[in-house]
Length: 121
Image (cartoon, rainbow, N blue to C red; front, side):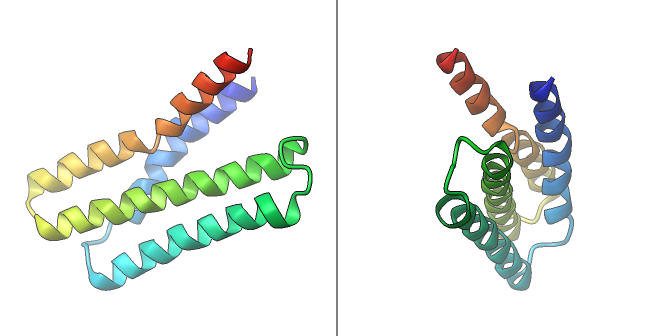
């Protein structure tokens, strides 16, 4: 049941977050915001991992929260890269391709999770 919930979040919510982060036209100010978003997500994940959660891996809530922030940071990096590419090539075709590929890339952690769980089993 838990994998179904994670699947829905990764394949449903991830692409929506990516779309939200890349909906505006690329700009220097937007690039700074996306970089800050990714940095804050990474800092929160590291704080949870090394500062707050002394029992990383044993406490499901803190571990899940830390992994969620790593994933959000990943989406932020994807959005940052997408906007940089769109800034270099503002054509409609590039906008469409980066939207599709970026949305698909937000789901990459799912495959790592499934691979890791199959090895652990």
